[in-house]
Length: 302
Image (cartoon, rainbow, N blue to C red; front, side, top):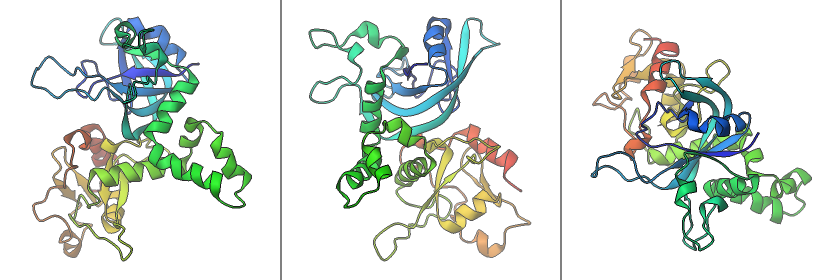
């Protein structure tokens, strides 16, 4: 097993859904097989498509995931899928090279300090554990730094807290409490701490928004939804309860669907008057049709 970088575009040429699968040609089969059972980091390149007016890629690492297996693409000869689990986007995109000129992947740096374009051109490339861990610590700095500060500074800190200082970042981020915290942070921020179904932004007496992050396709056993912004909605507690119990759902174009026989008129009056969910600020964070369809087919009672 070995860790790797998987390159994917916002509008991929291949049949990628990074939260679930990664599609690649035979060229990268050996590298992808070596990553089975281990962790990868996703990278978004600058070039997105042939349209000169299109969006330029961020040239940044943006999420982690684990490779669970490799299977052949039965519809396209010479192509394969890497099955993906435990997807989690970064708190912030991590550029492949920081302002000081330091590369996270040493293989991308030529002896003269310039970018090794040949290495950069490989869509799947192996990465040493220490370099992978450095990318994770940069991407999840807002989440990990307070915990590490507590472990280092808190008087009488428990041995298990102090051990966080030495634990690789990936070992911390597989734990459900930290994944829940990361998911809540990125989803709430994507919707500006506003409920997508009611349009309400409620701030408590301490100045903290009262908002929860809901999974569209649940993460519970038997559902296996990812911790992805595109599988998330920022909801008030009441709306979250109704959505999780299938009283509400969404169409692919974000029309709010209600289970008419199960939802009272009073509850319906809580919803946005235009009948559409509030979209996230960034269109790239919009709920993905795959997860919305899952909710309608398996959770919604309408």
